[in-house]
Image (tube, rainbow, N blue to C red):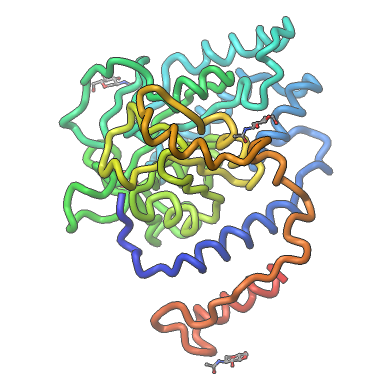
Length: 336
Ligand SMILES: *[C@@H]1O[C@H](CO)[C@@H](O)[C@H](O)[C@H]1NC(C)=O
Ligand SMILES: *[C@@H]1O[C@H](CO)[C@@H](O)[C@H](O)[C@H]1NC(C)=O
Ligand SMILES: *[C@@H]1O[C@H](CO)[C@@H](O)[C@H](O)[C@H]1NC(C)=O
Ligand SMILES: *[C@@H]1O[C@H](CO)[C@@H](O)[C@H](O)[C@H]1NC(C)=O
């Protein structure tokens, strides 16, 4: 899961992430009277469920419709779960009957998984390769069990750079034999980066609300930064890798790819922690989960008083006055 854009400076990814987080937090769509699914966050969707403005079935139908249209070009989605509508109906019934789990934050929320994360259902798990098509996985990945327990609907599998970019150095970012070439929804000719590009493309283009990607070396941070999203690369072992097609056990980690920081923390909240099937790493990393978890750090004024470093000359061709530096300056003004 290495990214071809390894020259991308990590500080810049962080800056971009922060700038997107800020622009998202000020552009809430709460002024609309008719509930709009496009760009809605998990909180927006849960509120709409509560106020009977939306059902999980309507939500899943909306996303399947968007996938039919947009995926022809963008190729972020490799397969749609044939049972997604059934799962959505079930979630709606549980919400109506007020069963306890239906109050969970991810209950009835559709999620997309990178195609290297095993699901024991009708979806294939192939890392984008024909070599694994029709192979049967013995059980759900540890992450998937946690997501199911939290009530999430596994809507679809995302394309990726085949074998998470470890097929060949000559293969373009985001290409897989099964998925074809994934496209950056903002600029179709631009590199969407990889290897979690299907997870990223699909969230950026509203083909699903949240997704999971995996990273060995840049595969969450690079595509989220190229496609205007929030990605969290958890410390290795914080999230179980059991049932995820591996690249390097020392470096592989699975994390959320979302449109807002809040959504990403919701996913993080339910997907990390000890897993018997990745016992050594998850036990070690669990020691570092702060008491009370990560949700407590979601504060509207969380950046108040913080000092940020600005890297002013991170790229080649980044001379003062160049196109790139002008774009950077204009985003920097927004960020300010
Ligand atoms: C899994 O792969 C098989 C073989 O190509 C295909 O028939 C099936 O439709 C795939 N499953 C889904 C959910 O797309
Ligand atoms: C994104 O995924 C698609 C689908 O597999 C792939 O064709 C494309 O090359 C990927 N792009 C990058 C930059 O990884
Ligand atoms: C998840 O959220 C619950 C409820 O807010 C909290 O008690 C728990 O500590 C959180 N876990 C993590 C890992 O953030
Ligand atoms: C580039 O321009 C900015 C202001 O626009 C200035 O502060 C900075 O010193 C310049 N950098 C170089 C290397 O000339």
